[in-house]
Each structure stands twice: as C-alpha cells, then as structure tokens.
Image (cartoon, rainbow, N blue to C red; front, side, top):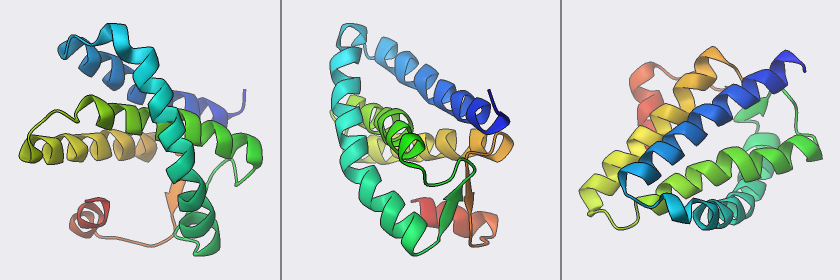
Length: 135
C-alpha cells in the first residue's frame, strides 16, 4: 500500500470513528448503515461537482492520489459520505448546535489531513482565514 493510500485510510478512519462515536452518543447505532448509505449518496452528488469544478478546473486544491476515477469515487463515497453522514446525524439539533457540530466536523476533516496529506490547498491562507473559508 502506498503512503498516499495509507494516508487516505487514516483520514477516513478518523472520520469513521467520529461517525460511530456520535451515533453511539445519539443512541442511533442501529441506523448507521442506513445513514451512511444516504451519506455516501450525498457524498457522490456533492463531491462530483466540487472536485471536478472547484478542485480540478479552478485548481483550488489537489489530491496526492490525483483526480483518477478510482480515487474520486472512493473519496466521494468514503470521505464525503462520512462527512455527510455525520451531518445527517446532527439534523435534529438546534441551529446553533448544528453550526457548532459542522465546525467540529471541518476540524476533524482538516486536522488529520495536515499530518496525513490526502489533499493540498493550492491557495495559501493564514490560519484565521482558513477557518473562515471552511465555515
């Protein structure tokens, strides 16, 4: 397994642990397959234009594994799918808590990538501007 694929697995594992942990906290563990299924579908629907337009066409970010079809489909299903599934778990929260939860999701999405590079932003942001862009 190449280092890039290992990094992908690590970042995905962190997202997965968060997903399972939050599902346990909400006592919705029995629903995780259904929720992840919807999350994967949402991940494909939103990931395709995001990666191809924002990432590849506008060049705002790139992937260490490139924009290959195999990687993109896995990325849409796994990383984008877990992100969407985590968001679906929080859909019953009040707006302020939902907003806070999505910020936590963004941090959990970006911090592991800092240490185990899966994607690289092609624009340079100071830390506070990076947070604003993520919001």
